[in-house]
Amino acid sequence: MSEPYVRPDVRQFLTYLNALPGPKTHELPPAEARALMKPMRYVADLPTGELAVIRNMTCPGPGGEIPLRLFDARETRAAGPLMLFLHGGGFVLGDLDSHEPLCAELARQLDLPVLAVDYRLAPEHPWPAGVEDAIAAAYWAAESPNALGRDVTGLVPCGDSAGGNFAIIVSLALRDTPARVPVLAQWPIYPAANPGPGADYPSYEDFAEGHLLTRPGMDWFEDCYGADPGDWRYDPLVKSQAGMPPTLVTTASLDPIRDQGRAYAAACIEAGVPTIFLEAKGNIHGYMNLRKAIPSAHQDLLDGIAALKLLLAEGA
Image (cartoon, rainbow, N blue to C red; front, side, top):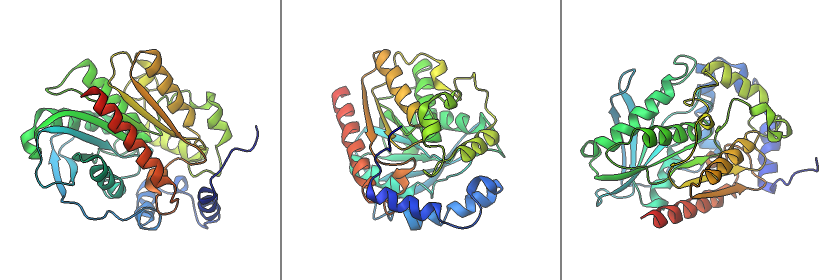
């Protein structure tokens, strides 16, 4: 294959990242890997910034109370949609803090409340614990608007990487068993959308090393998660995507799971789902949380937000 295009700021970040000493994330116990990830937010991502509402709360879940965090640019607002945000991290890493800057920016730019879900993580809570929490939180948000202090008229599931997988699965669950309010749109960001046969996709081989997300790292995530590859709550492409909400899929051109996102967008289009597909050319997996380290990634976020606004306006 010819050398792929790499943005200058992406190349600079990868040079820095790949020269770091010490063990890689997948070489550590999960608790240590999570502790290593926490300070990286302040090194690599932009600050959270000012926001009218950043409120911790909980909802009932199958394994106990699920921690949540509500982000809103307004103290009060009229009835309207709610974004349900599901963080990435390979089903093993990530929490409400790791994705706080992104959730705050989504709330600001979309002028929507954003509810982030702190689902249970593997390997302490293997599949399907995390995705069951995501589904439970979605139904709770759809059925319990007064608990949020906002009149929710529809949901917009969104998530990055593993969270993109969850966002699609949440939309499938609500398609098949509708809640009080509809799913208005979904936005899976560089999603693990077809994780079972990942090795069959060219991008899995082409970017398996040196682009932040690596093959050993992905193997570690899969081993920790312990999912059933034939179950739709792991591989959403086991099910037809017909009847899914308007969909925005964003990928990164240098991402080993890029082709999973492409395949998911194609499946939505083939099923007649209104679909927008955006690919951040020259960028890597995880760029939504790297907007300080990779300044050009902020424009990718803004491009995605503009596309989502278009989908929501068309469906209004």
